[in-house]
Image 1: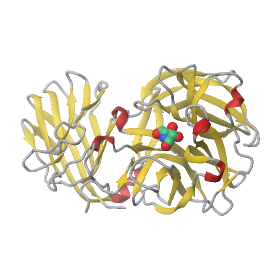
Image 2: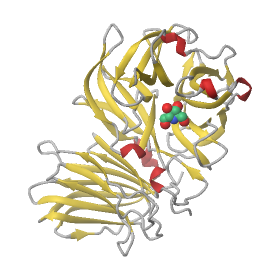
Image 3: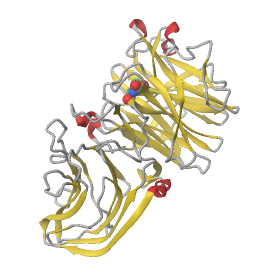
Image 4: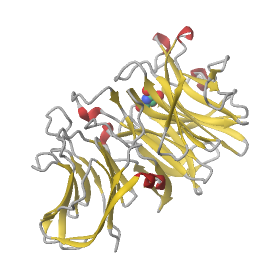
Length: 458
Ligand code: DQQ
């Protein structure tokens, strides 16, 4: 088995993958498309890969959905979405070419339709459907990544980009998916550009999720009659630095759940050779709003992968403690009673017997922070050793609950389901599979419960 390749996360068999695209639930199956380079393990010649799943977890690979139309000057099929229009699955994506059709100043939005249950796709003969001239003399650049939804009988679309050198999201509407009217700049910020917007309704609020060449952010609010987003709260979707979780995409299924996947980048491996693949999709997350903040839980379907459960309860740790459970592909739920006896502690995962390699999740009540320390994650000096961190404070009488998924080179931590950190780590030792919990500062750590499951491969 490859030491680094995840076994229960979605990946193509080989080559490069980046953003999840066109997530949609259609005729009882989840469909995932993704940015894919069939020609190598670096970004380039971007196609749309395609897979489907009945349970959100176990995927069946399908033929490539979109190829660049070289005869029309197209070199890449950038990110986008898939909607079902009168039973007809319809993809919107950003078409990129050479020279004047470059992503900075020459992007176009194209459409493709499937008439055979999403097996093959035909590009619309009147592409582009949307061009930059829709915006009159506005200074629009880096225009891309359509995301559509239907509301009140009309289609709406958001696109990312920049306007007057500020990252932003543009909003449009249409009655028929073919003619579009530009409505407004929905929201903007100081970043270079915003990519991959998802504008979704959760309860009675809208949430905008966008990827600003940095950690993925969200804003929560309402929309006014001028199609401006009236933002009430802003936050970070995943404190993974700019090289962890990126370009997430989402869908709603028939149960009404909003389900999100994000791309777990490979940048942290540096020049370490891991195999003929690059890029992993995160575990699926279910999104809701709580206290005007984004609440994210792993999809319960992940439980179908669980095996060999070990449970530990009410353990007081004064120095350190090791559960006997171990592995490189695990789900862990750890709950702690945090009081004045503890100031800082660490959970070491993917730890070698000699302790030379370990990835430490450190919680500090002094700094109100939770971090993933990668300084010893890999004995290889080629990999990124940086620490990923978020501020985190418990509410009164709240326990600290860490829900963790590790899968060889991926670590995803849900912190009381209101913060997340996703990290890539590349331990090079076969025995880097142990767990240890240690008090770093303080007298005693009260572990309320610890559940550990080994995970089956998909
Ligand atoms: N990746 C795509 C773009 C998108 C970026 C190109 C985000 O459409 O903006 O592969 O990772």
